[in-house]
Length: 498
Ligand code: NAI
Ligand code: MG
Image (cartoon, rainbow, N blue to C red):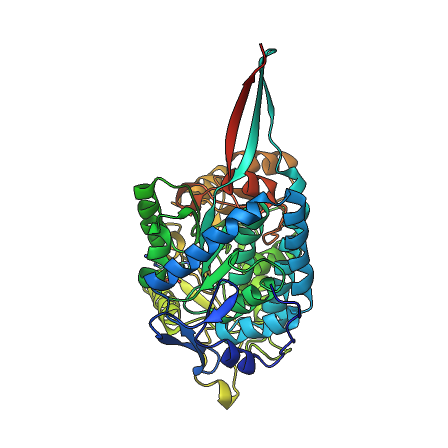
């Protein structure tokens, strides 16, 4: 814990250099035990902006040891005291919103105005929200017998390992660490290889308030750094957000140790637009739902939009017009709505899906205009694409693209729309747009998803339980229930008074 607040550094390049080559272990910025690093690239310009520490088992060992030690003292503090400190983290982060937003934009290519500032704001809010929930870590009294007082109490798990992705790293990290800390755990986070600096900066800010060792951050690759974190004997819980493929690897490793996991995996979220829907609202909802401002890099992306035949053509032309009006360009520029894809690998993946959609006979309506500035020539820009003419059996409708590509699929019959919406391995989120109350209510009961919304498509909110069914994951994030169910053990205590 340091006494001084950190100076705000608005130049993201300077901050990336300052944070280069470091993990945060036991309250201090330290290099990897091996001294190894890897490049971090600004995808908008193809330039190296810094080097991240290359974490391996030795670094995991040091971070987990520090966490285990700090956790013992932390758990002894009254819950409200822990909550006050976590809420104070939210306040401290507020002063750094602009700085953090610029840094996350530099490393991910997400637009500053439409994406990064919003994310940095919600980050702070998540700490404030969970800090206030500390007094809710309550147990129960069980009516077992009048002479045997039976109670339950919530106890922390110990050291939590958190593995996060690059698409919304700050928010996804906050939804894991804030409840874990309030519940009395210590945390070791492994950042995504594409986006290590903004989360490291956040960790540094939190470490001005929290005791050293309570919250540690490692950067590195999945197999070398993520895997040893999952298998470490002292890690008692793993919370992961990322691909289904890696989620399965994490789940299997956790199963060997018989520890609980929370998995927030992919999605292929349906949006059903009925013929009577308010078209303007539905089109606006599709733009938000598909996360076009985030280049579609969202597990909740409304990537299958089922539109009733009677309004199909009108819907497509209005949606195209709306996305056309969005400005694609330098993510740090205030005028920009849409930035770049995060990495060359994702860029190629998205391009291949667009090609695949054409091969399957779909019509690709490319929207918005490619940026023309010469400086952006090496940027990973992809025009958003609305596909028509593909069916729900297309690979584009079945597989998570994680790019600005959505399929608009025509339907005539409500039953058919519901069946197609559910005909997917995923079940993260779903929406229906209609003014028919009976249909709306019916759909909320029948859509197979962790979150169903009617006539809106809100993004993740701290007090709304969030998490998928089917291969979209296990467990819930955000909300009180996430803290109680996923970051504590329930102990039963029986006192015989007879
Ligand atoms: P990924 O699932 O491989 O990576 C997510 C995190 O897991 C990263 O921190 C990574 O280093 C770590 N990881 C990788 N292998 C690991 C292992 N063996 N043990 C422990 N940790 C490991 O996802 P990636 O490669 O970034 O993206 C691939 C695809 O995954 C995307 O195209 C997208 O479809 C999906 N994805 C879904 C996300 C979501 O929010 N649900 C987020 C990111 C990606
Ligand atoms: Mg991967």
